[in-house]
Length: 388
Image 1 (cartoon, rainbow, N blue to C red):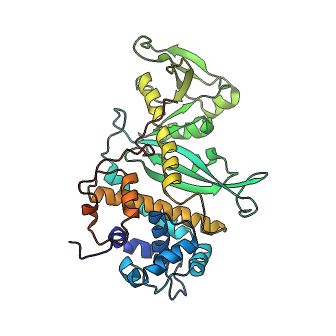
Image 2: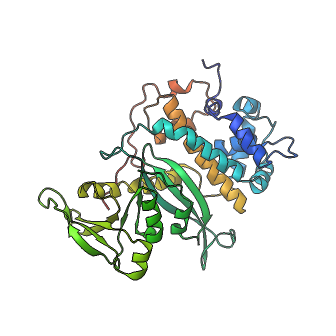
Image 3: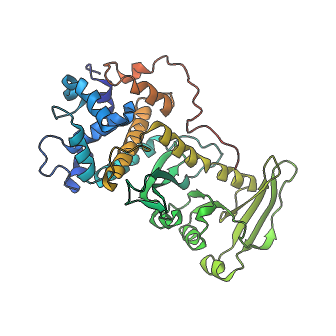
């Protein structure tokens, strides 16, 4: 039963403190720290995410106004200084929050495991892609991207049951997305949806050998040698052809020696799209529908860029940038956990909007959302874009 706790404190009650302390101890985050612990840092940065603070001074001013409530918010320090927070972000290992985010993901994914997919498929489905976060080269020289630009890339494997990221890796802008495929732990029987930027046949063959399935688009110069065609319904579906064959070019055939399936469909405007997959049993129209679900990872990137603070950074070092991104991920997953545990019907967008205005109230979180009207959210992760 709620004992008059502030809303922010109620949210942080869902943080598994034993695990957080274990992550801090692993990377010696609180070594020789007296006043401003790693958990204080986590609370301050999470507060910034939940209340849309734009700068260190903004965080400092808002928390100092509530100085008498800091203890009730969960802080153990007596005051928040922007210099102290800036120094913590710069020198305390971002791996603390990366490890903690992975643990939170491990809690969230089972909560969403029974959420239905947009298509009728009884299997795990993942969408893999990367988003680029642009930076200024003169301010962030450690993150080269182009001649005059810097950037970091956020590589994400999104579990489409609940749109919870199951894998995240952050690199500089020059790292090619396809290289990150080597770091994935492939789940047998699962489907991996990728755009044609990941068309690397050696890596796709590793997925095939792991008894998992991939669906990706062909490039304009991808050569395919048909062995036989399967019947398709051109009248009632948009499927043009469904073919099984091999890759005829020497290098491609060496990288992927097994048979592969190519499905060609057309959209409402008559434009053709061809997909490659190693699944030989699903209906061809379902293969196209599967690839359409890859848009969920694009929508996830759009959502977090709009509703979390990962475009404007509170520090210039690599450690500070990665710390801010990982704590943003922790905040996203923590709110997703709260949504399921408290059985809230609102979308994550609605929950964040309401929470941002209620951090210092003492209303039980459930009551904040009782009787709320549905708000149209064109940016929610459930919004569907056109086919391709």
